[in-house]
Amino acid sequence: MTEHDAGAGRAAKDRLVELLGWEWSTLADLLATLDEATWARPALPGWDVHDVVAHLVGTERTLAGAPQPEPPPTIDDAPHVRNPIARLNEAWVAELRGLSAAELLDAFRAVTAERLAALAAMSTEEFDAPSWTPVGDATYGRFMGVRLFDSWMHEQDIRAAVGVPGNEDGPVAELAVDEVVGALGYIIAKRGGAPQGSSVRITLTGPVRRVVTVVVDGRARVAEGVEGEPTATIDLSSSLFLRLAGGRQDPEDALGVIGLGGDTALARRLASHLAYTI
Image (cartoon, rainbow, N blue to C red; front, side, top):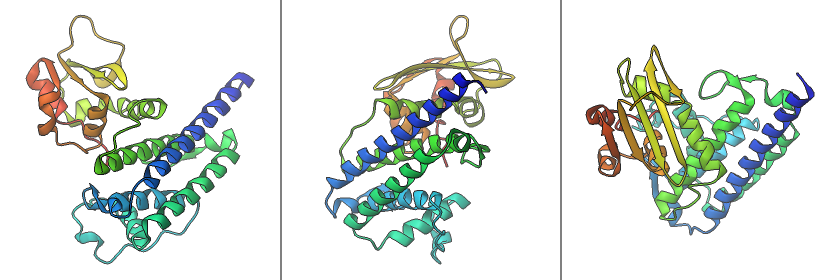
């Protein structure tokens, strides 16, 4: 590795840690404005705002080395618990459910401060070391990128629940879009069933603006573009794009505000099958 490569690696690591700190601070500031009753508003299937924050606290405590709590006896009866990762998440949610909103916010601030200190102290080699991640074997740094995405998505879940929109543009929102764009080959080909030889252009109209083309040619992939017109086009806001990708939005309810072009039947099917997160 050259000195230039090492410097670039340090800069990338420091930037990611900085963005995690910014995101967690933004979320803590939002939570501090909410009264106890607002924390009880539904945010996701089976979870209220308190539960979403408990999930974030539990995940960071696990990464800090805390022992995993035992899942509640009724965990398998919950319809929103559909896979092993969800069972682990639910164990922490149940463990922390007895805390008041103020106590849980204190716990969030404490564990995120602990994690930021640990991440800042890591060497570039440690950050780039092989690691399990929710998106497959990669590096610890890649895992932290997923943590940033997850934290931002849950911030948006909370904002939607309490009716306080915000933070839908800027560097963290850009990275959230990047996270989904990186999976678009899978989403378009496997989830949407785009046929061989087809292509789709997705235009994000804001707050994050992006034009992404996916071609299905042997293996679906994001491409620079296609000659002529793509088979199908989809135009929508970046906020709606991320809600659909995260399974937060019923696509049937959203189709009325999505621009569909080219082969509109294919475009409609693809726009209806953007969800991919677990």
